Image (cartoon, rainbow, N blue to C red; front, side, top):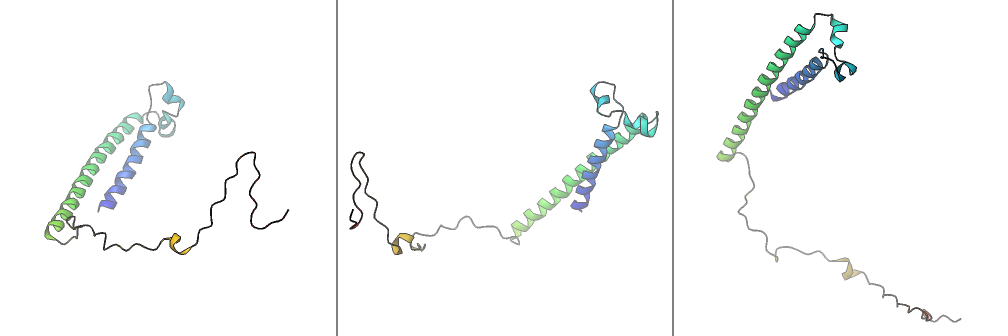
Length: 136
């Protein structure tokens, strides 16, 4: 039911936007952007009919919005009732967290892999120490 009402509401919004866009403007920038296009398509006396359609569309929008609100409130009340009766499982927030002795710590990579020794820093102006038994 809510999917159908929501779809109708979205379609009605699009129709209302189109109705407002094709109505005659009093001039200014609206006429440069296509205002008054309904006169070209529907004839010179279409302004009164477009106004009536816009009013009915907006009335329908408000009615659909209220119906959706009532529907969602009813669904929220059903969920609350189910939670009170225990049908819907909710997380128990009064459970104590696990103690440190219950948590297993996985072995780290440093326990099983040997680490190479750090390189010896070189002081500027001195020769670098020889690596291993290399002869020059």
